Image (cartoon, rainbow, N blue to C red; front, side, top):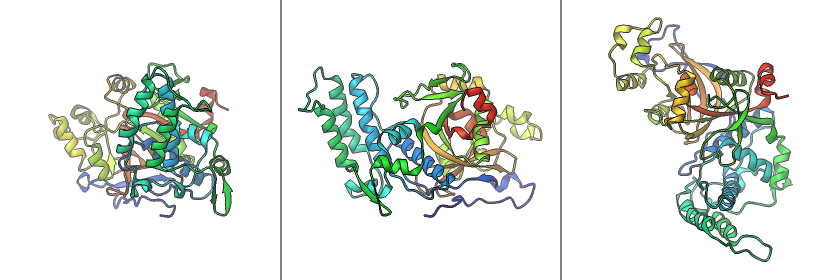
Length: 398
C-alpha cells in the first residue's frame, strides 16, 4: 500500500448539517503515514504504534517510505525485559506490554531492520502475530529463573536461563539478523538505523497529572513502563496545545491512552470515539435543547452518541487525575495521531491510525474527539522540535 492520506474523509455537504445525518467530518489537517498494520493476537501495540511513529517521522524528514520490522523490536525488547525481571528477582512483570520508550531504547541499542527480514507469524505459517503460545512458554521460564537462588552459566559467564529464553523466542519470532542487504547495500541493524537519520534523543514524552511538579520529568506509574522512562509534566490545556501545535507544524504524535470507555471498540469500528457530556452538562451548553437532554440516563446518552454527534464532556484536571488514581484510566493502548478534523457540531477531533488491521469504516483509522483525548491520554510522544519556543523554554529544552 503506497504512502498516502489513507483516510477517505467525507466532507460536509452543507454548513448546517443535521445531527441525524450521522457523523460528518471536515478535515482540518492531515499528515502522511504508512499503511495500517495488524498486531493481531499480540499485546504489542506499543511496538506497532512506535514503529508507525518512526515511519511517519521518516516521511516527515523526506526520507521516503519505510516498512520497519515490529518483530525485531519485540524480540530484543522481550529479551531485555526477561533479563531485567531476573535481575529484580521477579519484582516486576514480564509481559507483552510496553511503552513508546521501549521502541526508542531498542532502536538506539540494537538498531532497526526492514519488515521483510522479520515478519510476524512466519515461524508458525501465518502472516499475523500470535504471541499467546510464546508467552505461555516463556512466562514460566522467566519466573523460574527470577526465583532461582543460583543460576547456572556457561564458560563465557552467560546465564543458561537467558540463552534458553532466547532460543524459545527464536523458534516463535525468528532469528534476528546480524547482517543483511537492503536495496543493494549491506547493513547491520545498527548501521541501518544510523542510515535513516533518526536519533532517539530527538524524542520526548509528555503527560499531564497533578501529583508531580509542573515542567519536571518523572516516570509515569504504569506496569508497562518497566524501563521507568521519564515524561515531562505539563498542564492539561498545554498537553492539548502541544498536540495541536505538533500536528499543525507537520509532526506526528504518538498517543498512549486508555480505551476501556463504554462503546470504544464498537464506535471505533464506525470511525470515531467520543466522550459524551452528561445530560446536565449537555442541557447547559449554549444552543443545546434542554428538554431533549434533561432526564436522559448515561446509557441513553451513549446510545445517542453512537449514532450522531452530541455535546462533549470537557473534563477538569481533577476529574482526569481521579480517573488515573482509581484505575478507571489505565495504560491500555498506543496509537498514532496524524491530523485534526471537526464534526458538524463543531466538536474537534484527532485523526488516529490504529494497529488492529484495516477494519471499520475507515480501514483501520478513526476520529478521536479532543474531549476523549483530554480525559484518557496517559502520555504523548513527539519530536522535541514539535514544541513551541515558549514550551521549550518552560521545559528547559534547547
